[in-house]
Length: 104
Image 1 (cartoon, one colour):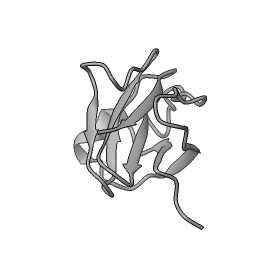
Image 2 (image 1 turned 90 degrees about the horizontal axis):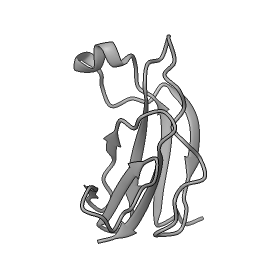
Image 3 (image 1 turned 45 degrees about the horizontal axis):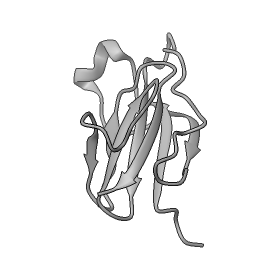
């Protein structure tokens, strides 16, 4: 089975108060989504969890891509993150944020 062109996994990587000590492991998984390019995700970043902290979006694309996240993400806009091909990139969204991606 081939992997999708672009996926985002949402999970908790530890308390936001201890981000300086965080590492690249995701502890509690919340959801994973692989929408079409230019389409906002249907899933949103969950609320901050007292035990687990703030959620992260871990993005990975098969090709160089752009990622935007927020209440109304726009991957063609000026505020976006470059996602190099076959590389995991973690971002800290606010609770309720969605994401959108497009090929670079």
